[in-house]
Length: 116
Image 1 (cartoon, rainbow, N blue to C red):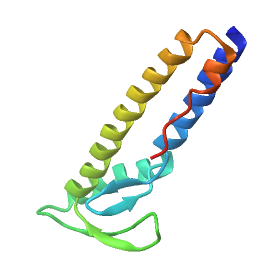
Image 2 (image 1 turned 120 degrees about the vertical axis):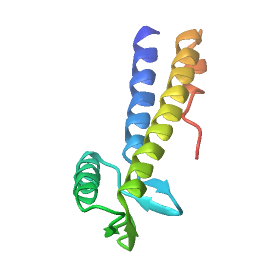
Image 3 (image 1 turned 180 degrees about the horizontal axis):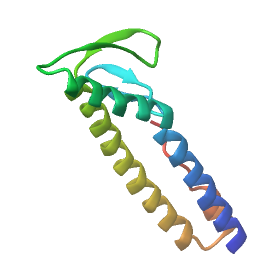
Image 4 (image 1 turned 135 degrees about the vertical axis):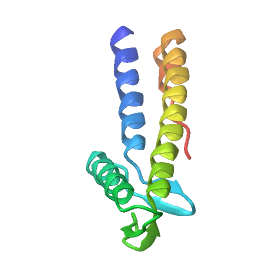
């Protein structure tokens, strides 16, 4: 039973981790948000901040479209990702608690990540 629970917890953690890398919705646009994208966003914030009063750049979106953004827009993307991350970790902890409380293999099998 402990192996079944451990496998389910690892499965749920993998789903959470994958969802953290999905594009982030901010201001009606989807922004890529994997580790490379985060580095680019952070670098762009610094570059824009160095340019003075509210400069903009065109940012390539997850769908390969583009939109003009400011440093504050990109900070908003990071904030949206942080809020999403918190929600994902909260959901994961609740599901993990269900797994740990399960008494049978069948009970564990019924625990799944909810669809979006």
